[in-house]
Image 1: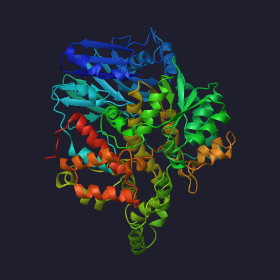
Image 2: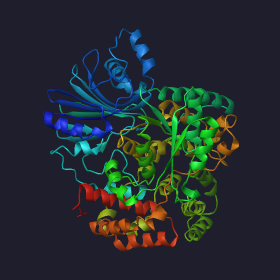
Image 3: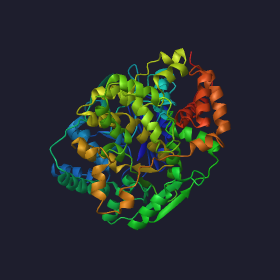
Length: 618
């Protein structure tokens, strides 16, 4: 695991070192550089596999040089294939396998990798620099092209070291962020800086840029019954977990006691591994925000040592360190528990497994059931649906992770829309009317096209399969995986996400919709897989999100910080101060759950103060 940075089209050793060392938290164990003509590659290494031999940059048999952030989990089988074709290896590292496979196959090599990666490879034979990112975007990679020059880095903080980059804030990115809580790839918060999209590559040669895609989440449903699907999933999940548990350093597990993390725990135990498990909880949050009882039950059943981590922080003092760790504005409040559990886990372990991705692959979100119900609901007379939408506007929220009344209101409010527009609305946090009232003219006219809506157009299959394609290309990489990467690497902890393994993703894309998304129950296939292995108290428990008691804090410990941020935020020309105050009043009265919108405003304001204190939308 590493942080990587570099450039093409200039010679500047001091800049290369500055960009690379800006990522020291991602790789505290070592640093390395390759400077050749107008090419500069830098690496900060967190040693996980082949502690002595895995130093970077890594050179292949034909002279190609790579810097690499991530892990290749099928590297042993790939290495055997390469050895049979005459390759001789100098290390036990997956990086050497990657660079030699590239020397043999070029950009076609990336599709053969099962892992998480962001990589830069300089090939002196063709005078090309190639960048690539893994299938679903577990690892980040930012890129900026300025004329004939190219700059790249694992985080924006590397590019902030480049004096040649103006780093102008993109109002369109902010418009999307305030609605969806993240900035969608290929956009970043800055104009002229992009996130390399998942499953894609970029090639620089003599100042010219070429782009390509080696993988897309294409639904390929096949005729398969429940029994056959369970057999395949059992074998595949066992293989993936065994491979992702390989490390030459201590291994941990994030255990919430939910279905996904407990499934990982079960398959680790089956593989003969019993890593220490970690779970955070909030003593002042009540049952709505605590997963401790579930985690204790799961750990006891599976014989794992559990380290409960009570969180009683001075929340206000944690804001700026968290915002600095996020690097780019990210308004998902799950970043807070992820930040805390990563920091505490790093005291014992260098690698931790997480259950991120299970909800997407196996139908774990209530909105998936809502989408299936929507198809039936839209057969009702339009006038009736319009009347119900009017009634729904007055339904209050329940301030919990299971906001059933809020779900009902959101479902009924989109009954007259096309499925793609309805789903984009569900993923957003502001209605069109709320955005019209809150956004200033400058922000309203910014190019903030809905990423979920655009991804829906590019997806294929029936409604359930298209929604999976949307989430695999938007919400999963740009929100969940982004916050997991930033918050864990801030503590130099490598987080692996077995349920995002491309082989499992391909398996899910091949499932008929009825196996993946239940009409009456979430995660029907995963529950069927585990029902003979785990007690009903775990398999049939209700879903609980990874949440923090923000509502409690906004009325107490965080209220001064929020009031201060909203006052300044309103003067930046982004939103109307009166509209912000209405949102806050709605939250305080309990009529609507506005914690996500308020938190996103707080994070963005603190980010602006950290990086651009005087910025204002013209």
